[in-house]
Length: 375
Image 1 (tube, rainbow, N blue to C red):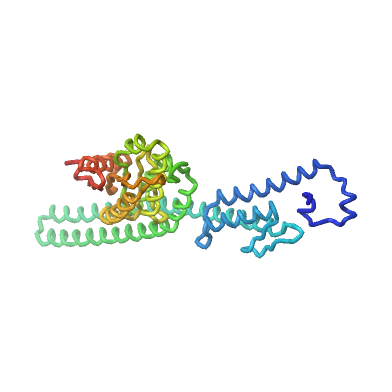
Image 2 (tube, helix red, strand yellow):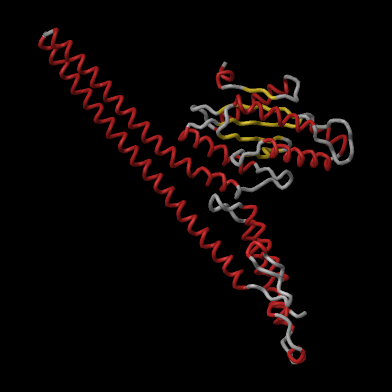
């Protein structure tokens, strides 16, 4: 069947006999089909979740279904597009699908940009109010201290006692009001920031992944750890960082070859993905046989249980070559983010914990707190 027939349906016998369309036109039409199909594939592979009701994976599958429909007339059940016996394409549905998605993405981006601008405005406004409130507090305290000084100058003990009592009471009330105002503004800002945290999770998917393990790469990790540190300072959410190293990985390469080593790393990447399953959990290949995991909203005491589960799964890794002996164990060092931390300080502490795990015999996890490092 010619390209024209595939697009608009089978032609009559006479029409086929009279078809003198140059073959170059058919080649152009084939190229157009391939181009449109590829555009739909790219729209799916480069997609991001635009709201809570849309699953990125489901949308990618839908794009692939429409791409197949363009290429060969396959049905798209999710959109009630049947397969036409004559190979006709439902171009109106293809156009509508593409246009609806682009409009939804445009609306989503515009709304998020507005939300971020509003947060910046609220933050600036809040800081201005804090400065103004601090000045009012300072003025109040200075005024009350002047009353106390006047009482002292008068030498009236009763007046001094009353002035001090009034000053203490007013200062306490002023600081109490100030604290309530700070807490209210911080809560409001936290609520707004929390509503946008999902955007950070979605943005993570745009980062590059390591081609061997499908974990995120070092560049993605560097961005993610800085972002989590910033979020910690704003929201005061706990964050735990893990550094993971394969024990005696060189022996695997020497004994079974580098292909086996790559197989171990691939399976280890899958093991990490199954062990740290929340959308916010961030698994990256830090370099060579070393991995890093960022666990937002997780204290170290809770991370320890997840690490134990990972270590058990890692020991179950076997090579497809059929070797029966256990080839893989891992050492894990972990630490919890503190208010005073920089990225460098946090990494040094996690690396210290990893060294501690290796020195203690490997195949284990060790925790290092900020106080431990200072000691």
